[in-house]
Amino acid sequence: MINIALGFDSNFAPYAAVTIKSILQHNQNVNFYLMYDNLKKSDMAKIDAMIDSEKGGGGKTFWVNMSGKFNNLFTGSWSSSAVYFPLALPSICKDERILFLDADTMVTGDLSDFYNQDLTGYYLAGVHDYGMVANINSGEEIATDNNKKLFTKEYFNNFLNWNIEEMKKYFNSGMMLMNLKLMREENIEEKIYASLKEKTFAFPDQDCINYVCHAKVKILEPKYNYMVLHDNTWDNLSDEVKNSLLKYKQEKEIPLIVHFLKKPWRKPAEEVSFSKTYNQLRKLTPYKNHRSKQETFQFRWSKKGKYLRILNKTIFDFSA
Image (cartoon, rainbow, N blue to C red; front, side):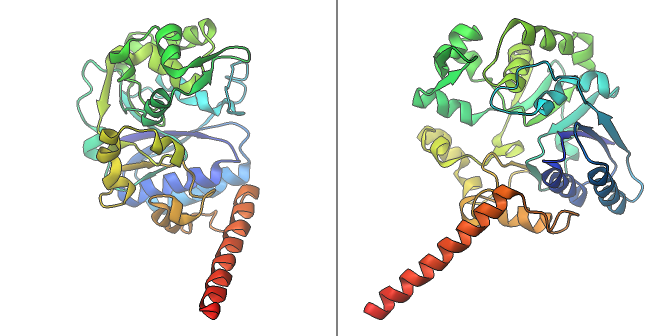
């Protein structure tokens, strides 16, 4: 049995449904732990029906109401406390391990071998956050609170007390294979909450778990959390890192888990790797006709751009 957790509200339910659908297409016997806040009953019913139609009786779905649990915490540039939900998983799921996925991810294959890998001595397994690497390379400033900004390298050195080698272990929390047994034995959940009272992190949900767990993190290959990066982030990566990721960016190889930092519902399909597969999956969910205000705006501009390109080609051909 595979335990998988997601956290979302009604705004993100259509995208969480795609993540869940992608899992069900390639995996059986999955227990879902769906942590939510401000979720409509209609969204819950749609997702329940989708899961029940796919899993054929294998696995269970646990809806976990997180309302109010993290409301008093700083959320950084995010408006929702849902970013903190995975921190509570050691007390939510009593099994030995769980896979947490952000609701903007897509699974492309069987998770069994990945899920059952050896985690002895590790709190969790994750993939290096290449976006943070780009921040360091570009000298970008990040805010720790409303009044204080530090360059990314200074933030690691002074705020987190990390050296260069420790920076290399900074992982992206959008995919975490968590060793819940060890985390409970060493009171990691409590230590994370204590760190949130002690520090005002720039990326609170991700920084706090990195800060507490970094000494026992198993760093995995990018294919287990391939992050579809924004163009400016990609441009600031080193050539070595770009070369290691290019096969996925160009879709020459398919990663096991795709993580859409650049959202396929906000950008034209040709600008986002694996968006075609994502959009095909989306049509198989109860939200196939859903379009947010952002998507409607993007769609209109995309259509306008298409018409302008056609017009430009027509004029160019005519004048020739």
